Image (cartoon, rainbow, N blue to C red; front, side, top):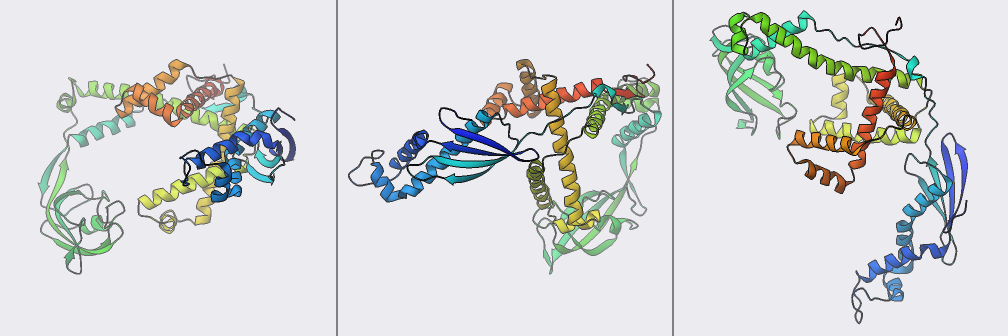
Length: 441
């Protein structure tokens, strides 16, 4: 296809892959060359010439004509590529592989771009998909669990003379040393430590259990990940167990209900907890319903995730995963041991997750297009206000920051995705729940 500035042709070279050939007349590159010469004229100093007024011939001599041409090419290529995509009506879903075929003085620029294109997505009949309704009823066991958590919050610690057990609190002097010298960050006097919390040296819990107040415990161990500079060091520990404190839970009666809040009886407290749990569970149920609805939609859609998108996202997630391990002072080998798996298995599982995630995003994008799901100014403003409230900032400041960083589009995309998921959840056939369209109706 020919436009006023360039000539293009496209060839299908594989499943959802296109090779785009672009020919650009040399005159169309003049603005790019002018910009490069202006840039260099303002940077180099040449006796006898004012800054910004250095002639092009001197710039070619000082910098090199080839360097100028290469910079002009790199500056011009992104816009030329976008123009070529528009000319051929191609929608790319990943960065292209560009090869410059010809770029000689006095001749047109010719380049080829290998492009991964958006695959055709054939959506199933959403109304024919079935989803099992998430559990929505609040059981007595759940209310009992919340009551026990409340009792634990209002528990008092009392000193006992017996041996330490898991769940107790031990008042200890913890001292870490190496070759008789204290290790900074590995000691803490009068440390009230919860036995079984695994928040100290890895062996500390096991060493404390079974010992009585007055015991002096010695062992060697590695400092736990996240403990700062000593993390991972193998050092000697000496622990003086000074006191053992056990939790004394309050009785579960009407007096406890009065202590917790404005309740006359325990039954009133239970009713309040049940109501609060129902509200929380309703929100969680709706989120789970969206998750299940998306899962059945993805399963029912015959679509192979584009390899290029999968590869790019896989590498991105792998980098983040390895960075998280490093922050925790762990290596891939440490993670392999902890999960009883090999690096090959870890990578394989991550790639499967990525491939499914890419497929899900393509399906949701297609659904959003079909249903013409969009974002209103009010919805965008509400989302920004909510984000601002969560971080304690003014909405206008957050909006300005998003605009400056070019992330407003990402916020809008998140809203569209959420609305699309709501559409799926509202239109699938939900089985077994009061909100669902049961097959017997």
